[in-house]
Figure 1 (cartoon, protein in one colour):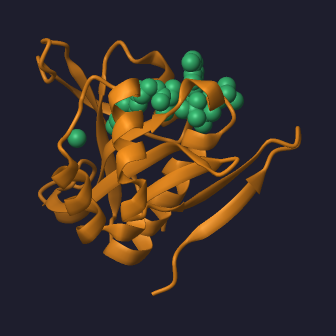
Figure 2 (cartoon, helix red, strand yellow; figure 1 turned 90 degrees about the vertical axis):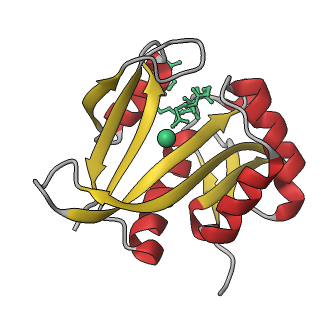
Figure 3 (cartoon, protein in one colour; figure 1 turned 135 degrees about the vertical axis):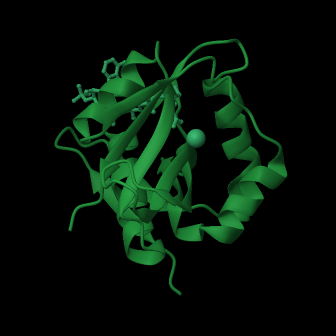
Length: 172
Ligand code: ACO
Ligand code: ZN
């Protein structure tokens, strides 16, 4: 199967590439994860997601450097939208963009392509994620992409903070 790669140029000339994660990106992605998020994972966790859902683990490159990533998996479970219905759900596990290149649409594009691939390659009918209730930037991003808050998960994070569970149906 060919490797996904797309180049995006903004009207202001800022250019970046969204492409599939490769194992050689591992150290850099782990570094981005550790510098951008309090939820950190061992290397095998990234490797396992790449092995299982290669089309839903993407990175963003700016000037030849990986500056952001999205890692997802697809799970079978009860629908958030259709009562008592089992569906494949695309779960966004981790998303981060380095501060130097934020607010340029990189996370939006990582999300859009990851969702497209979860639907087309792995049969996802809806998407979901957890996000800290204090994480206004991420919550704004997800709302803009059509996610809605389904419920609050009390004490979801290690430090006791609550999570919003947010979800969105896949487009037909
Ligand atoms: N304040 C308010 N709204 C924001 C902000 C912000 N700081 N950042 C993004 N948004 C909203 C805006 O509506 C924005 O559109 P606009 O710039 O036209 O106003 C929209 O989201 C799209 O923003 P992008 O440029 O696509 O997002 P960016 O590339 O900057 O990345 C991200 C957003 C991933 C949340 C980044 O800030 C980040 O890495 N934060 C730290 C890590 C994190 O919180 N990750 C998500 C955790 S939840 C999870 O992983 C499932
Ligand atoms: Zn999760």
